[in-house]
Length: 539
Image 1 (cartoon, rainbow, N blue to C red):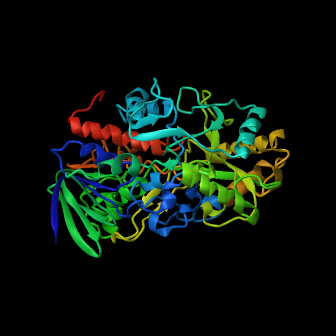
Image 2 (image 1 turned 30 degrees about the vertical axis):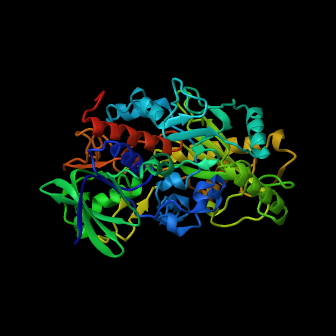
Image 3 (image 1 turned 90 degrees about the vertical axis):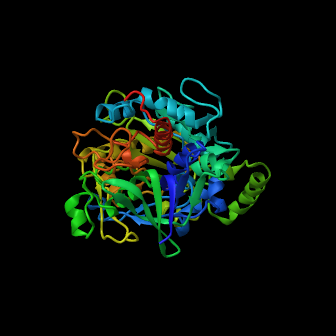
């Protein structure tokens, strides 16, 4: 079996892994190896923002995950898109740049992730960022991750913002400041009209470094140990196994699904379950795979009168032909849109202290089955998600074979408050769409709910149609030693072994109030600095 040795071995070239590889290899005395199961980010639809509408149809850039049957969602198995390419999910997401609330990070600190309060993490958001308006107390300039205003928005999105104001919502032009309750246009991780994933922002500029080795289409099978210390990773490339060894640490950056899975395959996790699957138990760590949280999403959709929005019809061909020319000649026009152009935050009846617990994404198009099924005609929809679910799920190992997917059970709506918040959000979305700003374009309802629907009818609509909005976190929870469910400490070191860290969305103790990509980048920025400097500030 072939062997190579590096100072640091990073598993996963996605939102966190690309950051770690770029930052660690900036030290020329360190050798760094990045392992990515998917291929390079060569699909042109990755880089064209509007290509988001079709990305879920490409099996070679996604993991193809489905959940277990969800009892509270009419026993449906839900599709869970996760990126399998350089850049990971930052190469396939909707590019909305959202950090969450100040209180989200203060809660992390209070619940045991000491040193991760808002004042601790804000500098790392700013370090990562190149904000189009320049630096200030909340934003950074000159960082790798470009954050811009959309170069193109559809007139239906203007109507949504006007209708929201009519319905009593304030307008916001920046959701990453102290006050974010209100609706407006999202800022996006784009640069000059192109998607700016972590692969483009962090990895591509440094690929020629002699101390950085990147292996794509290479699957990690297990972490290797010697007397309780991680010594490397066994991988498979072109059906052959090889060992990639480390002199310092193995860093797992596979995300909230793949990182706990690799830990379990390596013998770290709930001991009884691992033994039952024939896995030698290195550390009985019951929290691995538990504490799974995700944002559940319901869509209030309508047909449009006339040719409004991003429709699929013969009448739209001239529009898209023009859009193609504008994009090719100036990276502008409709193809620079992330489609989820507008949205924002609101409070449900259960919100405490005036903190928004609902998020909206407005799409000037009709979406079916995550974009995997084409819907002809024109329309628009308001996506509604409850930001702070109280339900908790888990991942379970189904076999000891690395190619066998694990069982994903988000346990959606297990807590009754989650359904209550979503019902409230759907009613708020209906109120917005019923405002006069939509009167001339609002056609027939696509969703089987109306403004006159009862709470039980809305609840049944949610059970029958709600889907993930792709924000799984928490399965390698960060916490203190007295927390039996904590998987890593506040420096992301896996408990019970040496030389192994998890650095990705799985370490988040609880979901942040919004999209999860920017917080994942922040975690990687901070951990890279910790590793490079060999110390921990504010711990």
